[in-house]
Amino acid sequence: MIHLQFANPTPASRIRHHGARHWHAEPYAGWLRYARDLVALKAPREPLGGPICLAVVVVGTRTTTPRKPPYAPKERARPGWATPEAWREGCRLWRPVKPDDDNYGKAIRDAMNGRIFADDAQIVASLAYKVLAARGEEAKILVWAGSVAEEAEIFAACRAALGRVR
Image (cartoon, rainbow, N blue to C red; front, side):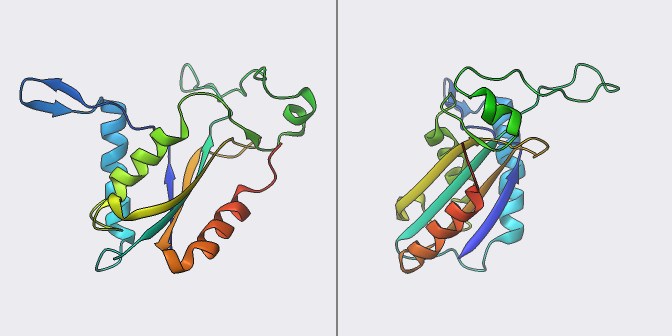
């Protein structure tokens, strides 16, 4: 089983076209370069073969971006879907808003393709969760990948890392 952690979750963007030229918008293109570099450092010598299981936990940011360097990021206002009690508690919360979980999954598959597995078509089982970070927690993407024989272990590790979510 392979476990990776990526910073700054960025969903996959649609490919832009102009004639024969194709590219991604810069926020995603930059994240993809970073993620591929990280994967290259952690990848096995040979990509995994056969059917693959993939599990992902996307932990979104709970803070706003500061306006200028001397200011620290502030906590966002409580979203309408979060109960006041859960928000005050500061635990992780389910994140039922855009971007969709499949956009993050596509970003992860793009980053791992050719390094962790030969082709993302090998993925036969996947699990994805989207949560809002607990108070003081950084945004990140946690990923587990492995063979179908490791499915129970991969999905259990993913659920355990999810922690308590309200």
